[in-house]
Amino acid sequence: MLSEKDFTSTITDYNVEKASFQWSSPSNIALVKYWGKKDNQIPANPSISFTLNNCKTITKFDIQQTNDGNFTFELLFEGKPKPEFNKKVNQFFLRIEQYCSYINYFHFVIDTQNTFPHSSGIASSASGMAALAMNIMSLEKALNPDMTDEFFYKKASFLARLGSGSACRSIKGNVVVWGKHDEIANSSDEFGVEFPSQLHENFKNYQDTILLVDKGEKQVSSTVGHDLMHNHPFAKQRFDQAHENLSAIKTVLENGNLDEFIKIVESEALTLHAMMMTSMPYFILMKPNTLEIINRIWSFRSKTGSKVCFTLDAGANVHVLFPEREKEEVSKFIDNELSAYCKNNEFIKDQVGLGAFQLTS
Ligand code: PMV
Picture 1 (cartoon, helix red, strand yellow):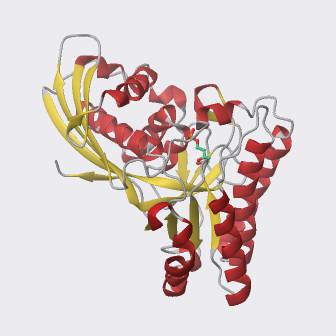
Picture 2 (spheres, rainbow, N blue to C red):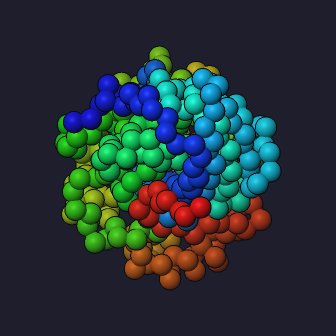
């Protein structure tokens, strides 16, 4: 099985003068959440996510060989310079440098854009870091054409993880597990792996409508939140629970039991926020409208028998999850009832997708 030691590039022949690549990488939504990490974005517990289809980052690399011995880059957002993003990209390059020493012989012009509205409160770090990692791997493949597909995607996920933990789940597959778990073959703390079992029909094209409750900057970043899990009074119980919930959801994704799915997914969302509320210092990312939406989903479910449920990210927005066969009824419910609790009535319709794709540049 591949692991960290296999990912250090030994390329010394930089026989690519110029190249262009372009990749589209999606966002993902965790069902069992990653919250808490060790050094180098090693997760404190395993997590599992649905890959999204419509919320994506599209990133183009124009690469030119140099003799500098140090990587250099220009960063454009939607074709225009965006100095605010330089720090994050620079940090990503510094983190991957020991595994991709060839980057020091190139200049990169990076042009990136998101398909979801800017400042929608949707984290672009997962899709953004995944798109950077895919482009880097295209360069590595150009330098080393014999690389296998398995290595290409595993190392891409490994590099994306170094950029932003959950980004490693945005590379390949509709359901992705990240973090070592006894019941998931070949699972690893270092990169994401495709869910190894056959996914039950009920989850094919599963729908995720993202209700934009709060579009502002988060008051507390994920980095700070992860850190607060060190010395957290409930950390051990939480990490153990994530292992148990991953075992339980594995069975559910195989047997299609939607009632069990709802229990695990909603409990995970509320547990994530409970960890925030019980950190020291404590914080709350949910807004009054987040709770309104949750209550309305619960009452719609008990009135209609629908299998709609919610999950939350590290923010106030609500992901409304439902089977494809309920698309019509739940869309009406969202239009008629839930959209009123969104900023400017805005929401994004998405569904489970397959991962990153190379675009012709
Ligand atoms: O990848 P990060 O460091 O932005 O952390 C993301 C954490 C959650 O989105 C809250 C949960 C998850 O597993 O995606």
